[in-house]
Length: 424
Image (cartoon, rainbow, N blue to C red):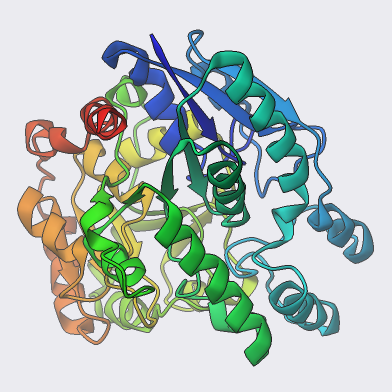
């Protein structure tokens, strides 16, 4: 098989959505004639937001996996702050912003560009060069965030003139929490320079949605869009082969994943409060993942029964989706949010359960929900519509959505498309 070097910070035993994209591509790439050579950080040196040992069981035996050490500043943050977790998603898991958090955000935004994980780069760059020579590798994929990983690809392109594909799962200087880091004008300019150099010098770009493609195309006067492909995240059908699910005593509305104080949840709160008491008594709202105390408090004030599960491994998170009657998804209300297509949406889709989404009505998520008929997306101000939708779904017998409609978003089908890009 032809070999492709995939440089990714997130790899098992890392948890979270970011690890799944290339873990799943690597699972299926050998079926399309490509052997993945993975370069990642040694877990003993890594600063993962979450760990999920279940992902280690999914690594394809055909993958050749190599690790290096790293210098991790987030681990220093844990030591100084006394916290068990490192910050992630714009410090979304930090419930209060004290002096330490304010100082850390400023340092993060002005002295650790493009991000605090750039301490891995010098180790990864050296090992990547060795692997390119050892395996005669001609194609390299770098995937981010962390966007510092893209600078490894940039240097490899300069040193070896390899074919370089940059996979950008999220926007860079346009991510919805970017302004929280209080960049100075100089720091912002440096970060924008890094971003522009990556999009201009990569042979091909891959992004997760059409609007994110637009964002990166606007970073340069060159024809960036012409070399950019959209491959969204997806779902692995193997993950949904779960039997003997527990029976719920109530109608369950589930929110899975990270939610922070930056998310606009006023409309869903107003919608829940407007429900009649009979419907309210039947509902359980379940959060699977990290929930700040402030967000927990406002949901409790609705008078509904709330269950906080916390972070669980991936198989358990899928189980909770399958035990639900309605799945809630909120897109952050921020500039450039039309291209946000979270990985969890596709797992929501694969569960067959109806989806209640809140976000931009002209965004990429709205188009897919309409295309797959998997639920409904509401504007941030439409609490009346949300309330009616919840009331209807809680009364009706829930009809599962046929998976056939969503099969174009299966990991295997998306890997076929990635393999075609590797061949270009």
